[in-house]
Length: 398
Ligand code: ADP
Image (cartoon, rainbow, N blue to C red):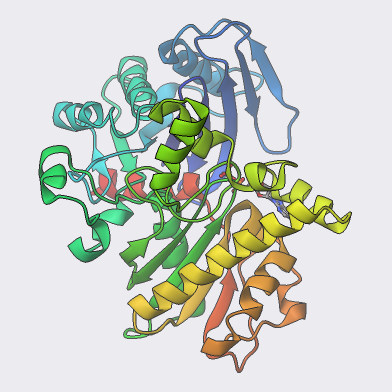
């Protein structure tokens, strides 16, 4: 069975066609500058040269049709007809409090995605456009919505409620939702499977450390807490996001710089984090390099990033009354042995011991702690596309 995975952004569309018989990626690609001039589709079949289509894409509708054309192209395609696609799995940012799991799309689901436009203004409209485009390009083929907020729905009230007047939760559903849910769910499950954690010993902390970064605590794969909140701004220091901050800072900057709240929020989302602190870059590689060259602000940014991750791990271990496994994932988590080692150096109080040789790896599932480490530590690569495809398969096979 072949499943198409779509991740639509406001002006982009990423896709992968996956053969679920062996979970192999048959083709993948990216449409860029949708709705803007000079749109381009880059299509790639493993082992073959990239196929680039420069064609106007005024809408997601057109982009989806071009993806279909590329997939059935006699030279660059991998299927002979779109009817070979059994289902489409869509990454959808926000499902509000309605969906705690993936779901086959019908009119009600589309309505909820639309009701959440306010909560995910950049992504939800694009996600819905992708779904509607697939409905018209492949009538009758099921579409599945896989929500980035679904995993966070596992949290109890004590973890998801903000201590603000309760009426705001009742009126506007202001609460913590958590994001990167598809990744946290996938990695926590993979950690349990790979580590062979027995029942009763499945308290897992996942550190998803990429340009966007978050930590989650889960027991038996059910979310106990996660660091992102109403929006992805809360929690860890990220590439350009501040993460946790005293809300009074917003007022202070707004007053002193004569900016609106929206403008300050834009600064906290796009100009803060590693970029704002280091003044070098939002890319962790650049900041690590700058530190090596003696840049003090870069060194402080790296230290502050690690300090926040360490605090969250400590807090989540306490929230679960212990932790059985810690997993590192995403761009930085999978690639920076130094970052993993330095974070774990501060966790010796809970019996974490890293094996430097085991830790000297990139991007593959492995144990990186010593055999006598009290808490086992793993590198578990995330794969959001495969996670979406698996969830889609499960639903359409029911
Ligand atoms: P996102 O999906 O949120 O855009 P990724 O998970 O792709 O982010 O992670 C991107 C980040 O990972 C970048 O900041 C990049 O610098 C970092 N990264 C990738 N490889 C390395 C490495 N070898 N050392 C340090 N950081 C790395």
